[in-house]
Amino acid sequence: MQIVRSKLTLIVFSVLLYSLVGVGLWYGYATPSHARAASAASTNSQHMFINCASRTTCADVWNSEQLFGYYVGHDEPSNLFYSNVPGSGNRMRYVLTLPSDPSINNPTEPGKSYNFELHPAFWFGMAMCDTQSFPELLSTCTPDSDKNIVDPAISPRHPGTAFMEMQFYPPGWTPWPAGVSCDPTQWCAALNIDSLSQNPVTGQTLNATCAAKTGLEYVNFAFITKNGVPQPNSPPNPVDSNVNTFTPNPAYDMFMNSGDQIAVTLHDTANGLKIELNDLTSGQSGSMTASAKNNFGGVKFAPTGTTCQDVPYNFHPMYSTSSEKTRVPWAAHSYNVAFSDEIGHFDFCNGPNAISVGGSCPSGNTEGMKTDPEPTDGDDNACFPASDSLLVQVSGCIGTNSGFDGMPYQNVWPDGNYTLHPTPIRFTSPLTGPTYTVNYSRTAFETDLPIVENPNVCNINTGAGCTLIPLTDDNTPAVFYPFYSITNSQSGCIWRLGNHMPYSVNDFGQNAQYGTLLNQAYTGLGGSPITIFDDFRQILSKNPCTTNQ
Image (cartoon, rainbow, N blue to C red; front, side):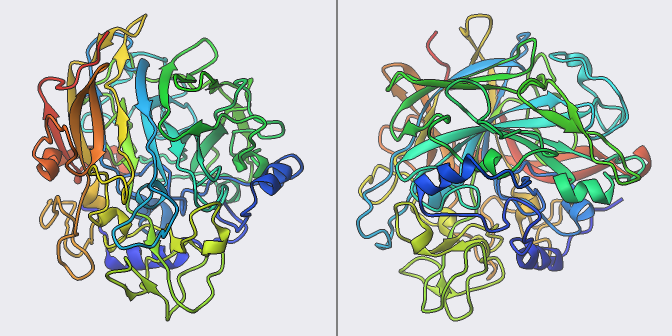
């Protein structure tokens, strides 16, 4: 069986992306006033959910055309970590340094960039149990166990699986819930758990009534709070979630300064996965546990009828270890324990015509950098006027940039020029073990470019035409694609993402680091396996950036 993708699906997606008024996170709720956002959170209980048929920060599924009727996805250059040590799949600690931005003066200066223009989020991930999620063939999932490893090429009977993303959101632009920022100058973070209501063997999905309320790919969402409990009247589960759930509130949520060092700890508990953020710079801390007590839950898989039921659930990590075999069987990527950046979104929308919040960039305006303005096209969606920004006054769009010509594909990534460009995302390799002293033995680089690239050029069934430097709509290579490098510091080796930077020890071949095409197996209709090329991946035989114990 071949997976058929067409340019039409990309065009349809661009048209539909942010026209889903009233049915998801992008129904138009936004305010440039932080105080007004906090006030709204205390009173507004209107139902709202993350609609992964349009939201930019969901985990990519391998068969979005089949699931949603059009392509949904985004570009995610990733760094994977492997270890055979028991517990390495469910217990780890990173030290993250949050990036800083250039001054807000002259924000449209040629070559100038900000974190919100490069990525609406970045995250640390892990595979999770969810008995109500794909492939819907088993009623149990043993937490923290490699007994859950099932190769779709051999059997479809994998335990129900979700994927957790511990996401960080940049400051300074349009505010949540419609935008990407929590605050004019401070970062915030949220625990996201993505699940999929689909049985690939029968082809059944969640009934239409419930899917309209939660989405087929549903998300449990909770900001990291100071006391480890979701904000009042802010249930994380998608059946009960509301505007409050997605509206940041500084009275409860943990906000962090650019440049702060954050210890990011992920570990299982009796009540589910717990995320702890300890700000080593300011001394503050926050946490969140994915527990039924905190109103996390699965969506009962009911392919027929009209019921929509929350199943209170403690979300536990799925695997004991982390390797090529510890996959989420419905996700485009191959990973379990990983860091990833979410790029490929922001593009400018400049010109004389007014921009409606969440709408498309009007015809007659221009996209692209100030030095290279171009007419607007079909992927200039989810746009916001400069007046909606919390701090940096620029107009732009954050829909999927399928033309690979937006800001993330320009030579504006961290390179040591901090007058024009942000500082890089910096993080240590994770440590595992009872006291977080054990390094992961191997790493890998991976990007899901094949499923994002033009299907008329890149054939994911054969890999023909798929390129490490993606092609723009003009079939010319993108100007730039970010890559990982390492440097040494007093505390040991540090990973960085961006361009070549001062004091770089190893750039790993820059874009060549993402390796070669990866042929992965998925479960098709009737249970037969399908193999497609969703990713480029290179596995390093040794972790080149171990962390001091």
